[in-house]
Length: 398
Image (cartoon, rainbow, N blue to C red; front, side, top):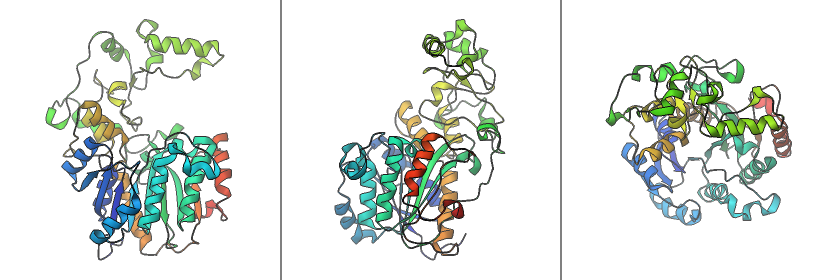
């Protein structure tokens, strides 16, 4: 990696607890301003990193904000962040007028008025198929119209030293014609649903099994009654469906019964809304979400994962502290970009920024929507949308 003489200036939008920003800071970027609309997340950000502000990003006038900041920081080199996908859309010319699309619209407005050389946008994998692929199509189309070459990739975090099976969509854009290459996997994953990786849950939390420390957020919750009986009965890799019927949650049994009546094969019965899953120590963890401490059972102890163990799986350091009550702390952790991956991504941008990777046409769209050999019908539909924006075969760019 080559470092520039001066740090690359970044603005962070939808910064959350600061997972992505921590990675970019470690890579040498200068986060000159950070914004989120959740006060508790801003509190966490400022306790650990500093410089964040509460701002309603749904109603923000980015033209005005860019003018206010230009006298202080000049033009940022990069904007990073992840506007939530609202899950609804209007197609075509009505897309940008639909209030349900205001967050991604405002992110595009930020690119329009700040005119950074680079941007990074992170989102859940569902953004690829929302509204039959039209959501991602319209968003990328606007970015290309602003002069950005856009690189889209579904990233499997367990391939980048993150000890969990976490899939996220990353968009990287550049408006100077610089070719970008996503970082090379550091811990390649193989096997069914890519669950075999050299980085495991044991690596992340093995030393915390018998630790109880409130200051570390490592304070196991004491379970009792039928939930403790369920936990005790589960073996590694098992979930609610593997329990004896007398221990299964009523909501699970009702759901399973409905699926059988609908003709769903028994092997395809899913978990219940209140499902428990005992994790496997020597595999990457399941995806950490805000529900993890209520669903994920420790591999060897009869207890749920703690907040600190969830943070470890997300690759936060132990001295990174989270503000708010228990539910708000785990929400911040579950929504975060793992800092270890963020640093690798930031370093790849630095490598591309010196121009050594070559040049591409402005407005180029390249994409890798899945690692699987075959695409689902939904992803195939999205690919057809993106092909209309992409004159060059995406396979030549990854």
